[in-house]
Image 1 (cartoon, one colour):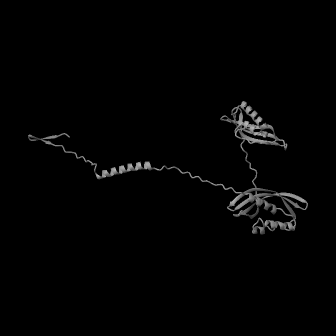
Image 2 (cartoon, one colour):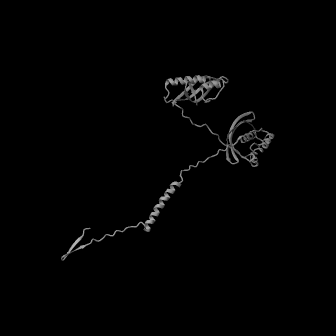
Image 3 (cartoon, one colour):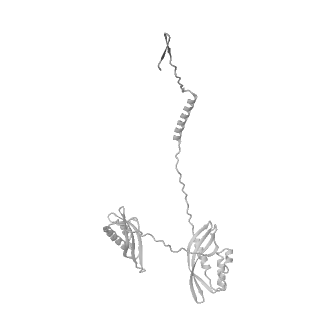
Length: 303
């Protein structure tokens, strides 16, 4: 700041500039010390967390469902024996009484009483069982099983014979010793019918040229001609790693039907139907294959 001079009479008085006070914050002030402590603590804590951090990742829990195999042989045999005794009788008193005695080996006491009059003493028909089909055995709970079956009967009345077929469902209880008893009377049921599902048929996509199609077709005709009677050694020349099994049957090759070819990565996939004549039955047999072929020195079936 410039000095200011004032004249007073003959003397000149110099006025000194005023000093501007600057407030200095000392390094030893308590507030500054606290701030430094916080800063250093944060830095140390960050370094510590960096070295001791636990990698976190998503844990995917996989539920493992154990499949318990159920031996249904005893249940199926028990059911078939029951069906033979339940649906067979002669129209006489002795036969009907014997039937009731046999049913006591299968039914609970309550069901025995319920089924006493299913075949009356004066019934005019006789019945024999010609066929039994077990369609399903399913576990209802820990010791109860449901069985669906179809029984075919030959019904005779006077001199007339008639065949009938019906489907039923029963429930069985199996105790810890494996013993069985029927707990539900034969109840009218139904069976699965033919599905209307039609698989998509493969189509050639033009990836195999005509020369190669001809070459592969000739290979397949040669192979399927001797395949039914081929030995292990002969089969190994055309088939890799037992991709097809030994047949050893008296079939005579007739023709290949509607072969479809697709090529991918030096392999050719073939869908084919092979027509054979069964020399024993004289019937026609159609075998259908889905094959993968590769060529090294010669064509081979690899899958």
